[in-house]
Image 1 (cartoon, rainbow, N blue to C red):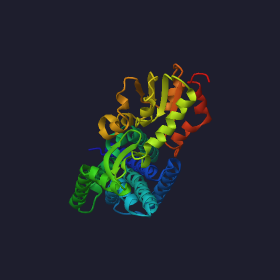
Image 2: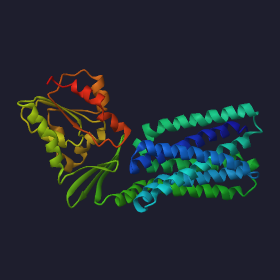
Image 3: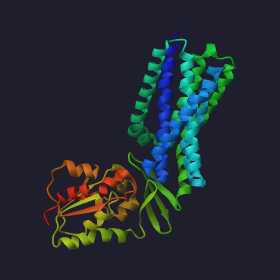
Image 4: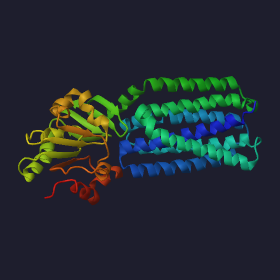
Length: 393
């Protein structure tokens, strides 16, 4: 049996898993520490450097290459698979989270850097050097592309960070076990023991996958002072609602958006001065952001308002009132008002791409610009664009 094509498939899987772990670390660091540009830059740099270190260390492995390759797969499965729950728990429990974060990224990168050189040495007798390098790099880059597409479009929205890391840990362990069959002629150690080790790792990862919600809750319970009563990961953010002595609080990616105890002060001050400045009988109102419906509650108090268009990126946020009764009560069931139209779109893109009848009043209710994605919503270009959608004067 020609095992060479199957070994190249291993290259593809290894590359996919490796990039997923890198993306997981960057996303999680951005979530808990903020400043996504800095976190992704540091993590990508440390990860690539660590891969270089791993490639250099592979030159010191002279014997039992096949066994070492399988052991490294199992090590990546454990370290990468448990990376997300470990990092969440570390952030909640330890003061030196950054050391754990960057150390873990360096460790995973080093192990991933060991994998491909060892696999190339295993394959060197099957192909000439030119074909070997071109095929290995081709499968490596294809795996990276697949990971970069799967991660934002499917894995994070559908599985979340914790389950994604555990799933790819299982995949790495499966590659290791599969390797004991593909590389059987080269393995000198007790292959049964290696396979048992791999299956034990998979069982542990599967149990953690099943209990992923409990692991996430354990970490998040330590992050928030009050009890978490609602938690949901959307395509765009992590939505958390807590309940304490002062009422309900909404957090997006760990950042407080409002507390029901005093949110009225913010939303009344946001809405009513604009109506006072406009004068009598505003009819068409635009709300950008404000997916919780609290600013819209204030807008709908004016009987002259005939239509309200709310533009918010996240459908999970604008749909939260229908799933979480306390928020519906807090915003006076504003989303159920017949005058309201909800558009789930990027506010900047929506303004730029749509020719619409001018509005009387625009209310801007965005989160603080704590990352570059939100920063564009605080530019002169954005406000000039918004001004063009309002009636003159």
